[in-house]
Image 1 (cartoon, protein in one colour):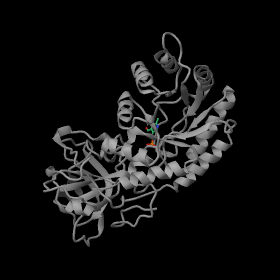
Image 2 (image 1 turned 90 degrees about the vertical axis):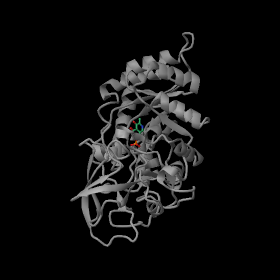
Image 3 (image 1 turned 180 degrees about the vertical axis):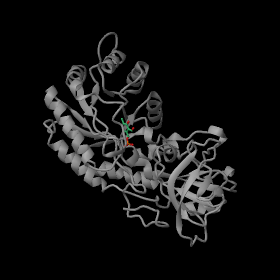
Image 4 (image 1 turned 45 degrees about the horizontal axis):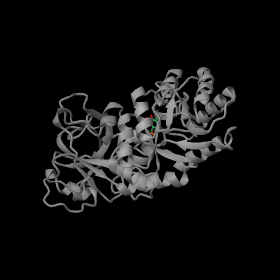
Length: 409
Ligand SMILES: Cc1ncc(COP(=O)(O)O)c(C=O)c1O
């Protein structure tokens, strides 16, 4: 990561501190802003307040700089979903503990993760996967004796904005046999689930924990780990969750009431909540057509979610002096030639916005930069560290920088 770059049309590297200052330099390409202090604050919050162990779900944002920030703030465990993520974290944080939590893995990936990178924690949701894990971690026909196996059970995503209820998770009528079989192969047995991303109510976890209870009672096995997965929300326009402490309290209460709580560990796999506030982008308006703004990032860049699932991110005009015009609703077109490169929003911006203006699109640290492509020759790696506050925060008393479309709690 660097502080400045010639490609921005800027002269010598200088310390740039705020989004507004960067817009003043009139960057030709989109610029990613990163806020290490915001990611460190989120990590410290989870480390200090979650009533168990928090492991970061790397898929949300695999930036090595971010991994280092989280590590420095006390996050020691990482949820990895592919061999690529295993290698990335092992290279970046050699002392980190890796947990391979994708329920469907290549046998070769399991083998390499176990023998070359010391991974001992694996998730699964089928007998086939259990057999794969046992085979891939055996040495000379002798089964590994140091596995932690987490059986993923299917739970509802009804209280979350993004469903994860279809693809993974063993159904209740098959859980007993799988838990029993995994118990035989495991040194430690876990039960994990995912309530869906951006869970808008703590009840999502309370309901899922009832499924866990039923599975434990039905299978009558000793369980050593309860892993409540990801799903912890961030804050976006129209999506303002209650305080994360309420989620933690609900989870703690539900965990304490499980028959295994006296001996089991409680884990979580937050992705979005740890990194959403870490980054945003500055884009330039290249053209205005009525209430449509043509900007230089979009569906194939950091705004994948805005285009493909209609996610609304906070926006603000970066112009000095500021506009006095009232806000109106705009939609965005991204830079590629593709009609799909369209973001409905609505994005509220001053009515006099015009070509050449700069906009900050906030809360893109989770599943934003991770999804970027260079399709059509667009996209840019320009990244600048800034020290101002993110456009919204679950962790700070944020004074909104501008405008009514900035969300605070
Ligand atoms: C297994 C697993 N854990 C954790 C996460 C992170 O979820 P979130 O970003 O909603 O916290 C995901 C996201 O897809 C996941 O699949």
